[in-house]
Amino acid sequence: MRLSVNRKAHFNAAHRLYRKDWSDEKNREIFGKCSNPHYHGHNYELIVKVTGKIDPETGFVMDLKRLKKLIYEEVEVPFDHKNLNKEVKPFDELNPTAENIVVVIWKKLRNKLRSNLDLEVTLYETPRNFVTYKGE
Picture (tube, rainbow, N blue to C red):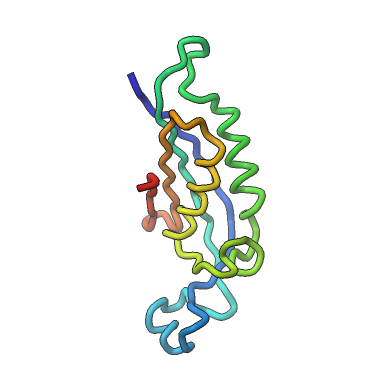
């Protein structure tokens, strides 16, 4: 039997959506107010879902204390209260859209999990705008 465990977390960060190779006009046309050259911020909400079989010894799919620590070390410490464009690689080169942020987070966490566990990450940029990535 496979089932999922979930952990919620949050971080606050600023970013600017733009492409360096586009004019200011084109960036404003495509990204609107999110292309503000002075940046803007979000209170991001994160849901990390790990799916696998229950370990008969522990009764866990994954120890949630370990998952909490992974999220803290891999996401909260490097992203919280940061300007993503200026302080967090790879966003110095990669446009920090919600889509790109969730893929970066997924990759960071995937590298720390056992291969027999599936991972899904959902990132809320606002209460109504969110993205989900499963590594497909």
